[in-house]
Amino acid sequence: MITFKFDLESQKDRYRKVKDKIKNEDFYQRLNFYVLPFMPEKFRGRVVFLPEKFEPEKIYKKQSLKLKKLEQAWESCETEFIEKLSIYFPELNSIDIQIEPSLYGTVGSFNIVGNKIFIFPRYDRGLISTKMIIINALTKYFFFKDNKDLENNTEQWKDKQAKAFEIGQNILNFKKPKSFVKILDTEFAGQLAEESAKYLEKLKASSKFELEKPDNLTRSEKNVLNLLLRSKNKLVTFDQIAEEIWREKVYEKYSEYAITTIIKKIKKKLKQKTDKNIIQAQRGVGYILHT
Image 1 (cartoon, rainbow, N blue to C red):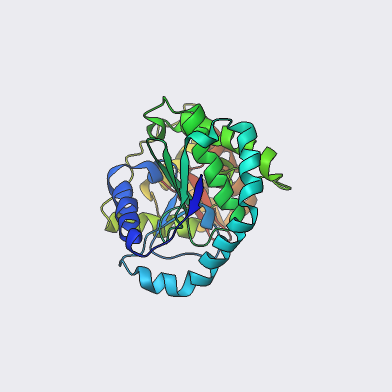
Image 2 (image 1 turned 90 degrees about the vertical axis):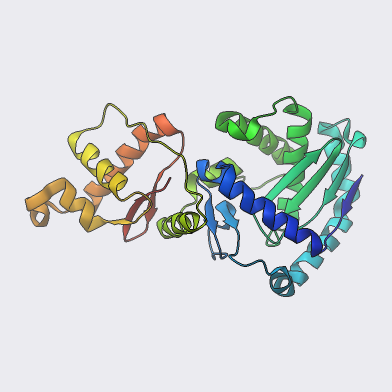
């Protein structure tokens, strides 16, 4: 059985849980989410939205129409969607699912308590995203139920995401599929990364990430990486990188193409160590090592 519910009282608990997860569990930081007190125009898929003040009425006033449309859209497709889910999750009738749109947090999350699953799509998400969160939760419940430490194991978490995405493709018929792991790996903006780092510092919730440097870096690559590390979570401009590479010959040899090439090589070598993009670009400005 799947039910749809929204009330402002439950938002206080959602706000507290998101804040506690940011400050105490390091999960969002390890996966390089952007933790922000505002909602940006782009890259919302990787944003954890947590305003500095708890003001649910203010957000609800602006977003109530979206929430109502989501509820209506859900009611119109519920029966058909449950039938499709039953193909991949034959024991679906053994659990209860409650959809509770959230004013905070990631694009979507869920909580499993016994045989009940609570689904929390963020207010800016539509019907497809809500369905995908349900599929994600059911995938964990039926295929990864025995893994009690899933969120602390990045590789197993990604395996779960990949399995859910595969099922989601079959049920939802994506035309241009992009998994959540792919979004985290490709959709980034240096400026948001810097603002996220500042906000995490304000929340006293910095990342525990430690970089293991590759052994096969060239001298230029090593110098650039060290520069980025010294300026960790701060934007480093093309000019600063150029001075690190060419020193006194910077005006003679300056080339953004060469800088971009060096960064690509560093990222490729780092990816083998970290399995995520920790160097992110700010178009036309430079790069940031986001941890």
